[in-house]
Image (cartoon, rainbow, N blue to C red):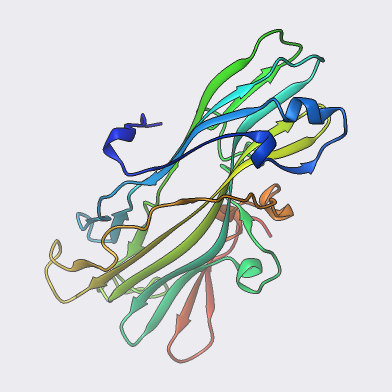
Length: 283
């Protein structure tokens, strides 16, 4: 994971003791004393203040890379009196997704999350697909095994961005002629800083962050390769928000499938019925 050069990026900072900020999803009475001793310091969240980069080096696909969302927090756990294991880390869920690739008057391809789009779920896990419910298990989490006699101090961090490939040609056509005219993407995420007791299954929300990524790329398929695409507004992204009041984690944000496994690529022609191009990995 890249290091955090916070002096270079605009960021939001907050310092708080959990007893004033914590959101308890499930915890017994004996755990309250421990909960109130957890201190969260210097929570930071930012999106790099740079534009999305566009790569036209391939004759088959257009690639783009968005700026990174970055989050970091300093956490202090009090001594753990029992033989228990606590994990502190980041959990992330996608709450909104629009991802359209327009091919002139022929139609568009669309990456979709059907259950989210139809309102069956509030959000879907954005875990790495292995370490549910955590976003990852390297810099994104820290595990402390009790009993311990001293405070445990650590920093946890995460980052996220998009780096997809979009075909120049219509994805359901045998032709390789470039038809792509526009790319539009708008996604929203909630990211939680969480302390979880894996022995008792207690889970405490320490902080809640909201962020989103929006982009629009205009494409002229008639121009030479390397001169086709142009980034439109917004050139830079809105900065994340650290909420003053925590939000509970929706159930689907904690379990399989994650967004990558649940998404489906559809072809939606201007005339005719929609077609599944790539089915979801998880049904």
